[in-house]
Length: 508
Ligand SMILES: Nc1ncnc2c1ncn2[C@@H]1O[C@H](COP(=O)(O)OP(=O)(O)OP(=O)(O)O)[C@@H](O)[C@H]1O
Ligand SMILES: [Mg+2]
Image (tube, rainbow, N blue to C red):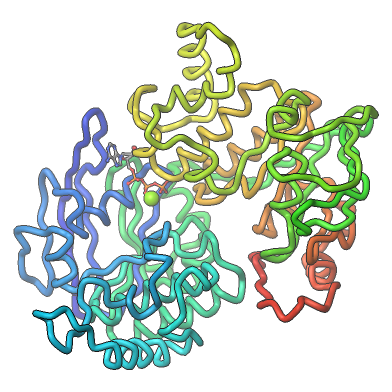
C-alpha cells in the first residue's frame, strides 16, 4: 500500500506544556488509521499541526513523499486535508449546500456576486446521494439532527476532494444506528482511496473499523501496530502504561432510606409526563432511553433548570419546592451536565476559577482556600493541567470533564446527577470516575446517572429506570437488567408521533 501521509518527529510546545515530543505517524492511501491515547496525550494537537492551526516547533510533514514546508488552514484544504470535528462547525441558519460549499460557492457572475444556485444544489445533492444519507441539500442545517450534521461535514470534505479526513471522536454524540451509517460511509471513503485518521476513546470501534493504530502517551510516541495483531488489553496497556483489569469496579453498598422521591412530576413545557421514581442513600440509579426520551429533561426538572407544572419532590421524606438551581443546590443536589462546553464550564476562565465557582456564594473570597481546594481536586482527579491558572478551554476534552466533576464534588452535595459522565473520557480516566462514584456512595451519597453507554449503565447501576417519550416506562433491578429488557422498555410507547427514532444507546 502506498504511503499518503507521513509526520515525522513532530514536537510542539505551548507555554508550560510540552504537548508533542517527537511523534511519528504514517498513513497509507485507503487506510483507516486510529490515533490513540489518553486525555491530554496530544492527539488533537497533532491533528491541528497537520491542519495548519498550530505550527510544529520541530519535525517534518510529507504528503505523497513530498516535504511540505508550510501549512496554514487554507493550504491544508488545498493539500486535501479535511476535518470532521468533535464539535461541529456549521452555520445553522444556512442550507446544507451553502455549508458544504462555504467560501467556494459557484458563481454565475463572480463580480456581481450572483451565485449559481442551480449548480450549487445539484453538486451538493449528487454528493449526498452518493453517500446514501438521505439529506436534501436545500434543508436548513438547524433542522437536522446531530448525526446528519456530521454527514454534512463529511460531504463537505468530499466536495473539497479530500485525500485524508480526520475524525476526532466522531461517535460521542451519535446513536447506535447512526454509528453504523458513519462506519458504512467511512468504509466507502476507504474503498475510494481516501485515508482516514480516526480518534476515539471507544476501543471497540477501533477493532471494528481501523487497520492500524498509532499510540501516544503524554505527548510521546509509543508505537504503531496492526489492529488485527493486538488485543484490547494490549492497546490499553500501550495507552495507559499499565494494565487495567476491572473496567467496572462497582462496589455494593446496601442502600439506605429513600433520599429522593419524585411523584407524578410533569414539566411545564410538556416534555416530561407523570414521572415517578425514587433514589436511596448509597445507591446508583441509571436512567436509560433513546435520544429525545426525556432523560436530560427529567434531571433538569429535579435540578430546577426547567419549570415543573405538577407533581411533588421529597428529600429525606420532606416535601421541597425546587424553583431554580439555587433551590436544588441548597437541597444538596448537583447536576454534572452533558454539555461541558456550553453548560458545565466557563471556558475562558482558569481551572481554579471553574473548580471553585460553586463556592462563590460568600461575600468575601478566601483565595487561600480556593487554591487549596483546587489543588486537592486536581490531584484527586488527576486533572492534567500545567497549573491552576491555565484557561479551562485549552485543556483536552477529558480534562475539561474532570473539572466539571471537581466543581460539584466541592459542594458537599448528597445527590449527584451525572448526565453522560464519561463522554469523551479515556479508558483510564473512565475507571477513575467509576471509582470516584464508588467512593461517593460509600460515603453515603446517592447518584443518578444518565448514560448511553450500555456497559457502563449495566456495570455501575443498582437499578435502572427506562424512559420513552417523556415517561418512565419501567424499572429494572440490577439482577434482571439486560440490554434487551432496556431496549424493550425504551421503545414500549410504540407511537413516536412520527418522529425519527434514534437509538442512542451504544450496544456492545
Ligand atoms: N492552545 C493551547 N494552549 C496551551 N496548551 C494546550 C493548547 N492546546 C492543547 N494544549 C495542551 O496540550 C496537551 C494535549 O492536548 P490535546 O487536546 O491534544 O489532547 P488529546 O489527546 O486530544 O486529549 P482528549 O482525548 O482529552 O481530547 C494538553 O495538556 C493540553 O492542555
Ligand atoms: Mg482531543
